[in-house]
Image (cartoon, rainbow, N blue to C red; front, top):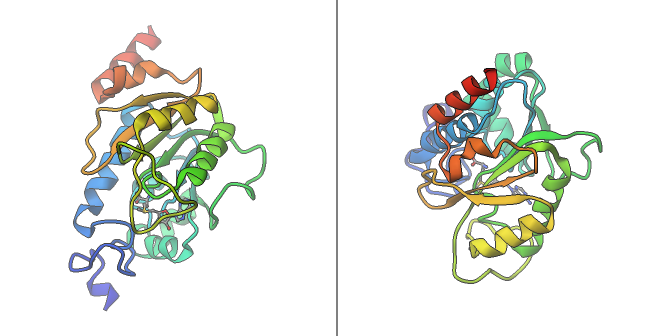
Length: 236
Ligand SMILES: C[S@@+](CC[C@H](N)C(=O)[O-])C[C@H]1O[C@@H](n2cnc3c(N)ncnc32)[C@H](O)[C@@H]1O
């Protein structure tokens, strides 16, 4: 049955199918492209190490794992079945053997070796499910794990007042005023910028360390041409 229904187009969001559980199945490809293109326009190269927070069924990992050098993709995901189905139906054993992605089947980074640092982190549709305590914990943890040149890209649902509650909220969504998220970023030494990068329901935000090349964000609207121009200028 599964073999004939890999795209899951007749499934509903939240169904126990690797594509449907994490979002609308008919947008699976769009979310892959949106996220990968943002990262590469914002400077991601093969030698960078990247953390994919709540990597799910590898909607983004299926593009990043082949792109990055071996061992440079780290995916955190508490629902191990999503990763296993993503590996099986979206990526395949041979790419895994070549690129050796690392997976943490966990809700946080406590068990990750203390010296591991990242150039890039991404949280696509994660802060739309974190109550304030968990949102702060993720921003704090990522801030400690990013290199001084590092950046986190995350999506947020904008709302007039912050949500309440605690922990992980799913499949319901939570909203935040962007000023609340910015204040949290600054509390943990990260600069904050909202981005003009299309998302069907949420707002992309960058949280970056002091030495990240913020020129790549071009005032909030990164682009491939901008990336290329900066690259040529720095080559002299
Ligand atoms: C809406 S899905 C997004 C998946 C993926 N980021 C993507 O865009 O394809 C949310 C994911 O977060 C995972 N998750 C659950 N609890 C989490 C936690 N405490 N921290 C981070 N991610 C969590 C879920 O299992 C699910 O895979």
